[in-house]
Image (cartoon, rainbow, N blue to C red; front, side, top):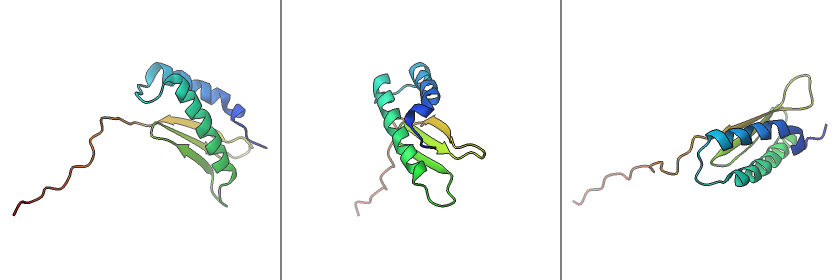
Length: 102
């Protein structure tokens, strides 16, 4: 079975609804989120189709979203998980080591 982004429209719609209602993101508008989901889904499909022997997943992500396609037994269509990553633009970077002036 050839995988296409259209096969996962239900999952995409649910993710966009959640994004619009619940996710606070300073870096993407809802339209930009849709574009990002489309791009990531295409990358996840490519990763899934080109996965190595014995591997069961195709994964694509950016700082805000992760999409994973997981092989399921008894069907050609993989499960599609769309996750919003916990991310803050205000996250503190690692502290610099203290230096001595001696």
